[in-house]
Length: 625
Image: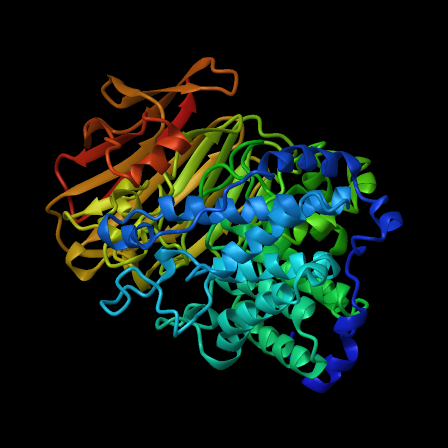
């Protein structure tokens, strides 16, 4: 994107700040009459509860929790609520335009500007020098500092005259804080999210998410059009670091629950730039990789509620319906538009400060949005060769029957879990064999203790433990010899997962093939070639109670979406393996997130090979009883 226009050309392309009106100004009541009134009135009612809101300070000890206990949620709860309240109050004042909310908005702006840190303690450098408290002399930009800057910029855009009537210091304070905390660090120092990491992996969702807010506050606040164009060009260069290594198939290795801040945030950048330049960036919508990045969200859907969750992604996703619809409209993908329309909520009163600018786009497209047919595409077959993910279901367009997904990839993916060779099985859109996914984030989620957390490790995925050794993290630990064979009645995915394990596992090759026979069953076949055979254990994860009902058969007591019990048989060779079932204890703070996703019912089924051999094969079959 940065090579399309030079900085000088960009200055000519961008609408000057003084003349840019992305959405109607607050006094343009004819313009606001075109916005969805039901949404505005619903928020207005909520915002009235904040007229007496006591804006809290954030004590140092709340920030220190990240190093003292590992807890990040208490700080974030206070910080995020303040911003959500400010967002709701601003939208209420725009709706009513009577000045009733202005003083509370001023209090909110001043309170946030007086915070030492706009980000969150979990994103502070984990060094003895920092030790849980921000060094205010060395500002840097994380996700939520950038979000805060964008929110304050929209407050400035809508209430500029009201603020100036109270005191010129209000707008001056907003600009100075945003400039010092965000603009200058972004222009003058390298941040890790801007480019590749030490292993050469491209940046994750932080890059487009922060850039979308960066572009927001630069376009809205910077009056010097030369500096404005220079900063936008720098943001485009940073965005290219995210775009260029992104797979052509559009697959998001962070999983669907991060898509809303990854590919969707890239779309935010493009749509904002088009709004600021009379569609000078419309060419991006024709790019096939960009189009595939959008389509990923519905390609990864399992059922109405569940999505394919690998890495840290959660199993349930509630996509931003209007944003999905807009993305689909701009790339002319009817499936994506109808998918977005399906999740539209009438009279939505929730005004969030996260991706705040999306609210304005949503308010002005309601009529066409609500008239769009609602439909979930549920593709029958999806193959993402770059991501090395296979998805298959019994029938196109419905969630009924079997759903199978399997992955290869590497163990240095963003938000990585050691999960090469993992697969999931769902039935009628409900989980059967699962990827547990992530739990609640704490300090060790992203530090050296990450792989001390059980659900990040391969022995708590549907993967084998060989000679007592599990998979390692890192780019070199990967799948190889990938094959995908689609067909009318069967579809199969195979990979050699040997390289996912360190040498001490003693694996020469381990070919895993997962096959869906549509309308009938799922089969898993492992063919192992080892240089030593001390022990082999194969693991399967489920969120239902299960029991060994006869030699060679485990019964999984599955429940459908209506809560009706339906038993599934998991067949194995009882002469070759012994099955043991254990209930996973959920005891830590991280486990609270797991409990929220699956309940307290996760079981791990361990198949211990009774007489391991250096050359052997193992087969499982999952079918309805």
